[in-house]
Length: 112
Image (cartoon, rainbow, N blue to C red; front, top):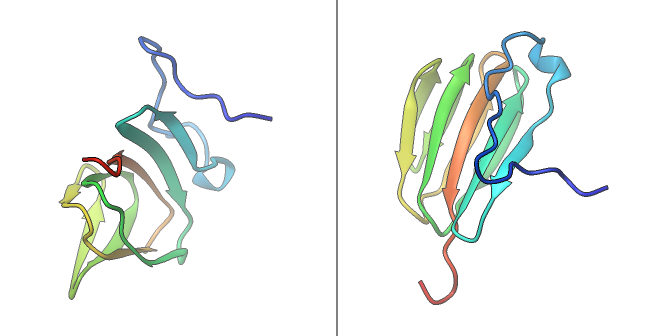
């Protein structure tokens, strides 16, 4: 079954406040030719290993606390915090508590 993405002009809730985060799945809210927006849910202790993407990204902490490794530094994101990373910046994530993030990724083509 294909993943349903938002259509242009469609509204959705990104804050999964009503439900326990253990009941909420990570999902790509939409993906266009130049931008992808993902609601990422990480339960306490979950790690995302070091990785990088070619385009710039933002990580907005909607709920909980997440430790983000950015190159050689560690930063803790708490509810309401926003982190910007330029393209090709290596980073990793560790959920300190159950957490929800809104991740926006600028998608670059090979010609950008």
